[in-house]
Length: 262
Image (tube, rainbow, N blue to C red; front, side, top):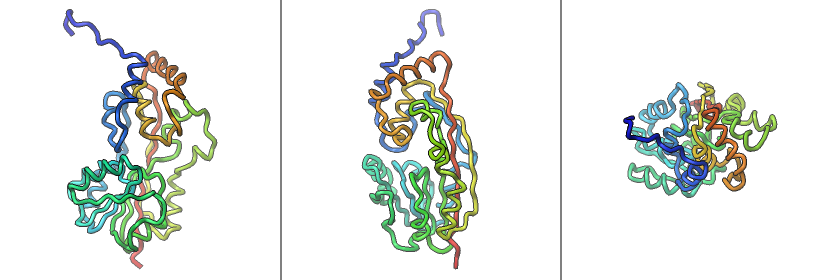
């Protein structure tokens, strides 16, 4: 920095909040957080691994596609590829992104039944599904077909959740257990061939990143608004300014299951 340049003025709490409230939270693209928050990625590389399976499939379904960003990144899609989504803003975004690729996006409430015939797909994928309906997944898979998914694990980013909501009950902390998911998959008639877990460091570098994250991932702090949590947000802003990034632990698990041939 030259002597004639003055240091960049730190943005105020109100400026950071206003910016984070104004930005769109449609889709499942978190690039707005670049330089403002950081999250380690699981070593297994879901998007790459999913694309490898897509290249070998003939008919694929992406459940709860979000804004379609991950599916759109696949270099070679099966001749028949379909996606589902429930949230209207994401549905519109995914349709605009995936339509030109020849992928129809079906409006689906994320509740059984899936709007597809028995045995329609040899590959079903889902990244961060709200809920995995195992009986329906097994029904729409062909014999020998594969389900491949990365899911949010137990107590993910709960340091942030509990900052706003206080200590959570044991049932909330143990929800989304990977071992339970494996048992449910097997109860639906699938064979689990891979189950991996990861605990990953997540950092929020300013209060705007926190607001954006909670606006986008709406189930973390249900009913979150800046007005409702202004006092807690101001206190966290001061904490980040004096102590550095707010650190939380993200949990993820990878599950792959196959429908038996017989």
